[in-house]
Image 1: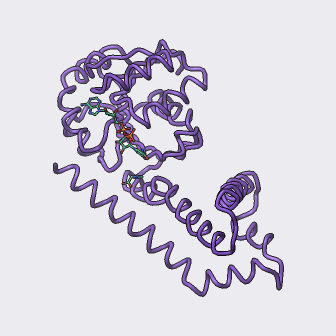
Image 2: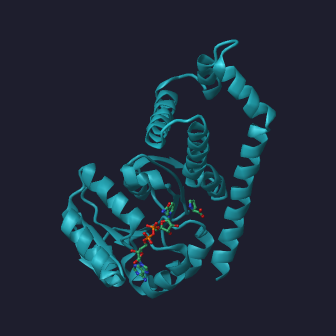
Length: 275
Ligand SMILES: NC(=O)C1=CN([C@@H]2O[C@H](COP(=O)(O)OP(=O)(O)OC[C@H]3O[C@@H](n4cnc5c(N)ncnc54)[C@H](O)[C@@H]3O)[C@@H](O)[C@H]2O)C=CC1
Ligand SMILES: O=C(O)[C@@H]1CCC=N1
């Protein structure tokens, strides 16, 4: 995998975090290419990461074994259709990280014979703790699956789904998920301020508590329910808080929110595919 040449079309937030992760995990910067319409973004990437840059998407595709499509979903069709000739000729593995762009749309724009892995990453990829779901079309072989998985694993965990429709659930759970935790952090901070706590004290205590809860959940064999019960002393403070959450319909509200994100993901895939 470290000998493969990887090209990024679009050098924004997600591309720069993936490139940072690849280099941190031992990939040589000389094997990485990136193209972008924004010359300043390209110069910053070249200066900071010592990778190869170009303003021409086709020139990057000419050089590489894997093409990562990392532009916004709204411009992907135009980008794909402008690159179709070089992709058909070069036959690289295409990895799309665009939210809401279905395999069917990518095949229609790039050609049905192209090997495409579609991914749903999330923003913690920027700090190398991302969570990504991946789906391969039937043209992708074992070596290409490993390649795609390794790229996304360089910025966190990467898990395959068999059915592409599962990516809508991945989007609703881990794609949008960081925002759910931030909302809880916002609400806890407001509550802490109302108790008279200083803002910087509240923020740090809440951030460290979120990190600690995630770390213990990852490192322990116990379920979230068992871990919650360990914090909840009978007759103590946590019990009162959990009871307030349950009585307020917390679980039903979370289910409703995740279902709303899931429905929107399906709707967006249809809209963006028809654009
Ligand atoms: N940021 C996020 O939380 C997540 C993003 N994604 C997906 O990742 C993709 C990239 O997102 P970001 O990095 O956040 O966006 P971004 O806006 O930071 O980066 C996109 C880059 O594409 C460049 N670009 C625009 N038109 C171009 C063209 N014709 N040719 C070459 N480059 C062009 C822009 O100049 C920009 O640097 C999107 O499709 C998004 O759906 C997926 C999951 C999470
Ligand atoms: O909110 C969105 O539509 C995108 C997809 C997952 C995270 N952000």
